[in-house]
Image (cartoon, rainbow over all chains, first blue to last red):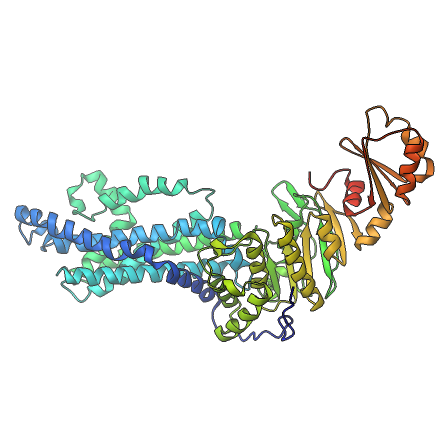
Amino acid sequence: MTDVALSEGLFGLDSPSARSHPRWMLAFSFWLLLYRRTWRGSILSTFVYPTLYLASMGIGLGGLVNRHVGTHALSLGGVSYLRFVTPGILVASAMQIGINEASWPVMSAIRWQRSYLAQCATPLRVIDVFIGHLAWIALRLLFACAIFVGISAGFGAVQSPLSLLEIVAATLLGLAFATPMAALAALLRGDEAFSTINRLLIVPLFLFSGTFFPIAQLPGQIQFVAELTPLYHGVALCRSLAGGHLLVWSNLVHLAYLLVLSILGVVIGRRTYSRRLER
Amino acid sequence: MKRFGEFEAVGGIDFTISRGEVFGFLGPNGAGKTSTMRMIACMSPRSGGVLRVTGRDPETDGSEIRRTIGLVPQDDALDSELSVLDNLHIYGRYFDLPRKEIRKRAQVLLEFAQLGERANTKVDELSGGMRRRLTIARALISRPQLMILDEPTTGLDPQARHLVWDRLHQLQSEGVTLIITTHYMDEAEQLCDRLVVMDQGLIVASGTPRELIDSIVSKEAVELRLDPGDATGLVEGLGTLVDRVEMLGDRLCLYGKDGDAILERVLGLGIHPISSFVRRAGLEDVFLALTGKSLND
């Protein structure tokens, strides 16, 4: 056995402790590194699915719809079906990315890979661990939404420069789902709950929140319920931006709704993370 | 003190660890060792009592104290999807060390952990012993004053254990303070300058390994496997040669200053054990004497 000279001082207090980065950023850099090593798995959901959705719903189904209701039907807000459905698909994918990124990865970081626990043994605090992960999810959403808007522009589905703001709005929508999901995932004992949430919550939202058709098509009672869902507010906000409207009251309401939900998730998550990681 | 609801994992325990010391917490599973480690590592708030780590209070200075601690958790908590080098790198980042500095330290630590050839291997593909050495190396990247190792060799094969012990001895000689939990007697005897024995959340004895053995049990032990019936009256016949007697399942364990003399006397009494075995008394015997149970139960 050969001993390695550690005399260069592997120990003691001589660490350069000039701290320059906020601590949450150090936790964030973990997720960035992990993504750099495993990004191949997300190509389908980031690039391929949006393209397939736009082609199938926007062009395929859209052709049929346009033939029946006309290319600029008032019920679709005076635009082609492709342009009507594009913000819907954008927001629905943001919801799914938000939910996915805040479910299995959170549980894994607590139970399987235990990355959170490794972080908690360092100067990082629980709040840094939590915010660092959320910051990563936000970046991931921003990236995916930007790609989507880029692809949809290629399809001719973008009519207003305000569509660039859709990227931000859809990211916020994704966070409005991600923060409460992360807060919950920190408490869950097993991953069975994720598929239940998907079946009972995400799929109905996906189908009935004004994503693929105006909610005016729904019966009155159900329409009222649809208007209460976060996905509806995200879709309505993005559709409004896509139509070139920025400063309207309803947008402010949508924005406030999504902000409140996101912040609520952070507030609750801070508690559930502490409960789980600082036992 | 640590409570989980009604359950008291760690009762009132009292200890002081000096700089440069190798201090052991010995006890069976569920004795409260890991809870104690998590409190010392400032990862778990205590439910009561006073705790100072490097002179500071974990409740108010947790983050700053953790900056000076290297933790080797029982379950490694390595990222299996990342390479050996990535694991070291990201851990260094958590301490906000400059990338250049991390690269420099990682090279030395890879050699130290004998993982030089494995820098780009995914953790998934490492053996248990390699993972444990990587976890130790990772904890060292911040140049800690204090290392906390929770069950450092549990689940490793003998060769891998010796390699870990060797590395820990090296740290010890460099003057790092080590806190180790273990339920292995030989590990505690090998590594620890001083130790406490824990059972059911309390410290039941403390001292150097030798002190504990000398003060609580006698120097030597004779283990006998007897025919049923032979045991009756045997102990009386041995008189002052034997200080203590313990039943270990179907074995009878006799403690005294001179093991060979005890065995000779047993044979002299006309008793022929199925098997007999004279050995030096160890920490296992201390634990048995203190708690009436064996450590690995």
